Image 1 (cartoon, one colour):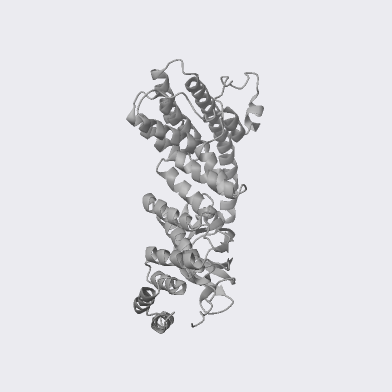
Image 2 (cartoon, one colour):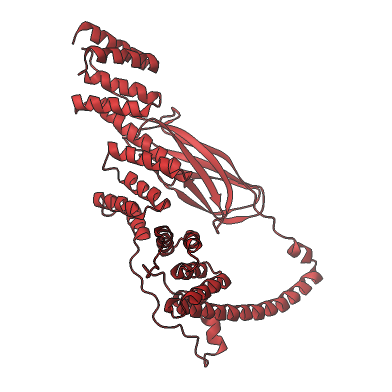
Length: 458
């Protein structure tokens, strides 16, 4: 290496240390022009590109540095940072339903690291969202090939290609006439519903027609077997809209509505399937199941009326006594609804430098204030629930938060040694016990990688 090449490289290194990245790029490029096999110059050029978010150029430079020197650590670390950047961008796009962009980002991450299991799984999710089931299946299988115990990939595979569940063969029987009223009251409505409801078939004989309608139908079956009834309803509707005589789509729609308790609409869908094919046994069984659940619902309503009547009498007696004692006004005062606010979110890390450093542990402190009535079983969820290079618990449960009080939750978080410098963005969502959102807050912090070792000056 001649003195001019070394001088350009040293100048580029100085610019890089001063965060003058554009000037550093120009200097490293001049060093490469005089010595195209200068691996360190290619690597440092990639770092300068990365700092300016010019990721494609950064990747090209890093790969060239590794081609020239496979053990050049700064270039290897740069590729790892690029992989993480592509993966994080893909997750953000996936959350925002930008599926094409997410697919491109996950592919870029996999190109850098074919063993990145999370990227294969996320790519499969993106393919599933746009209906490319076979490609989604391939990604899930590849993730499982890398790690046979990776549960998210197995769940994705189950959603794409569910295990065969045969339709119910026999008609459901109503409770025997001799069953007395007391036995009916003791029967668990949940158990009856689970035993009575027909299962989603893994496949049904489809009618001849557009592959597009069959794609929507297959999506509906996958969603139904994965417990995503609302998504299944949308998919079956799309299938029947493409072919109004698509018998199986009407049946699947009825089954999905049954799962969410919309019995009237489920009955209409089953009857439409029978209008198309009066001998279609699964639709007959679906109607039997709907009738059975309607019968159970009527029984539950009847017993509730009895319980309400008894309760009213009891309450009237208690209220009369309370009135005599002057307590009635206090009893009738309704409890105010909870009124929650996230008043403070902070990262508490050991170094005190404001960053979560590589191999460092810390805590996310979330202060929740309630200016309304008492609330119980509040869930605090972090979204996304997982970030590569970080370890944290995504869900915490707040057992009780009284009125006009506040409470601070602590979520331990730690960074792996491979973490790169980035801004981590999290959404903090507070929900009630039914999953209804109460309040949310955006929170971000920065991570800091291990320092790069200085390069020897040649």
